Amino acid sequence: MLIKTRNDGFIHPLASEISARSHYLGRRALLRNAAAGAAGWAIAPWASGQAMAQAPRPGKLAALASARSAVAGASTMEKLSDYKDASSYNNFYEFGTDKSDPARNAHSLKTSPWTVEVEGLVKKPAKYALEDLLKLSAQEERIYRLRCVEGWSMVIPWVGYSLAELVRKVEPLSGAKFVEFVTLADPKTMPFVGSRVLDWPYVEGLRMDEAMHPLTLLSFGMYGEVLPNQSGAPVRLVVPWKYGFKSGKSLVKIRFTDKQPVTAWNQAAPSEYGFYSNVNPEVDHPRWSQASERRIGEDGLLAKKRKTLLFNGYEAQVGQMYAGMDLKKFF
Ligand code: MTE
Image 1: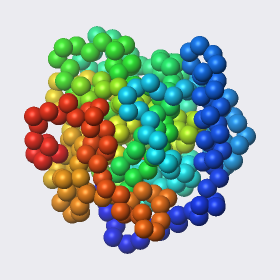
Image 2 (image 1 turned 180 degrees about the vertical axis):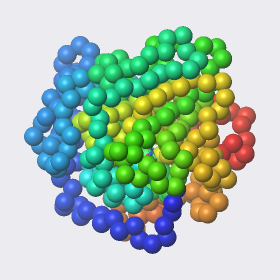
Image 3 (image 1 turned 90 degrees about the vertical axis):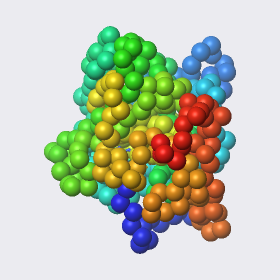
């Protein structure tokens, strides 16, 4: 990433200003009760006036419903980051390189109609309209830590389902070893596509077992609502044990291949951003330590004092996939 040493200009809200979270927590309790009462998944009352307090928020989408995930490790009990932080302190370079640029500029992104093309080494290649993708599997809520390679972190409640659900539907061929994720690069609606920061489109990739891991989430929403554009609407990936840049936003293509994909940041600076990019406090970025992190929204003593955890705290769930691998070499 383009790390700037100057103050990033972000103003942290006072605790007294953080009201959306309590509203949201109330709503989660409601969802839990609904899930407990009826057999199966709860259908969320999306347009709760309280949850919508911070306009403009994208609000409801009928097909998006959620209940808590049963996947092991899918929900940390840590304090949620405030919606305001998660939706105004972003990396989405197609809309600018300052943290506040995506929230300011991403209104131009046109998220409907939207299709995601699945192609390459699969038995059933398909073009999914967003509406069909939303219904492909039951949506769940996952509360994940997000650790950016730049040294900051958040805790975000995402809504979506395991990418594995989609992978199974398209039936990968035995030769498929990797999955490539291609995101939208539309110069008409994304003002910084064409800038020389990266080769566009923004491409990311996972090994097949990583893509199939139940924690790898295809996400359509956060905080119980549709993703705001700056967070990668209408559909993005969330891979919680890897640095945030592995989680491509606004996906348009998912391609199964036999070769390790050439990914945007790895191509731009291979010595700084490895293909794996598993969160690892012992593997420093060439220009800074990765041993600790700053939780956005935390001020004072806690700021910058949080120890970064191996695999971002998901070692029990994902460590086995890397058994025997030299994590310093394959960073
Ligand atoms: N996806 C696209 N298409 N473009 C980007 O610039 N930035 C990545 C990732 N996905 C990025 C992207 C980086 S560096 C991070 S840390 C996360 O998105 C940030 O996600 P957030 O803004 O929702 O916190």
